[in-house]
Each structure stands twice: as structure tokens, then as C-alpha cells.
Length: 128
Image 1 (tube, rainbow, N blue to C red):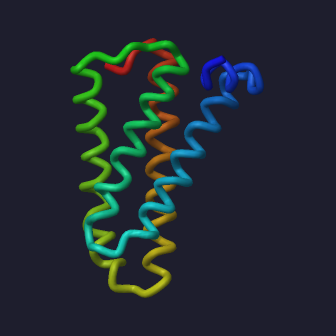
Image 2 (cartoon, helix red, strand yellow):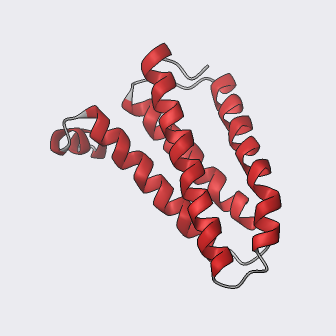
């Protein structure tokens, strides 16, 4: 049995499956943001996590990706990176607290992006 079928077998409620996907991605994004030491590199680490989360959510709703959907999602993800960029550069120089704040921001942005995607998929059945 494939992993997706196992996941659906043990977690039959779609809302809980979406929450598990989003919370897992948020935890991974927070870890990536806190662990990076090169200024600006956390955005490079977080983008693939967010794209993987969106892919998993689209798969959960059985929505197939087109090239345009991938591009628009990547552009939206890049927008979140730019929005956090200035704060990250300033916080990079604050020992310990800067890492904690960057981790919290990364988790919050990933949570918001994930639930926005779920809302869009429920409403329209597509990403575009």
C-alpha cells in the first residue's frame, strides 16, 4: 500500500490530514530558518518546503498541477521571501533571539500560506 493510502486509512478526516501536512511543513520551515547561519539563506531553504507542502495539499484534493500553477505558486512563495528578507537581515545579528524570531516568522508564513491554499482548493478546486 502506498504512503498516501496509509495516511488516508489512519487519518480519515481531510481537515486533519491538511493540518498534519501544514503543521509538518511549518515545523520544517521553522527548523530551517533557525538553523541557517548565512544571511538570506533561510529563504532558499524554506521555498522547497513550502512548494512540497502545496504539492501535498494539491494531491490531497486530487488537483493536478500545470506549469502555470507551479509558476504562480513559486512566485507567491518568492513574495513571502521578499517580505521577510529585511527583517531577517536585521535579526541575523541578534544572538539566539534572532533565530527564535526567524523560526516563528517562517512557521507563521508557512501556516498562512498552507491554509490559504486549502481555502483556495476547497473553493475553486484549482490553484489558479
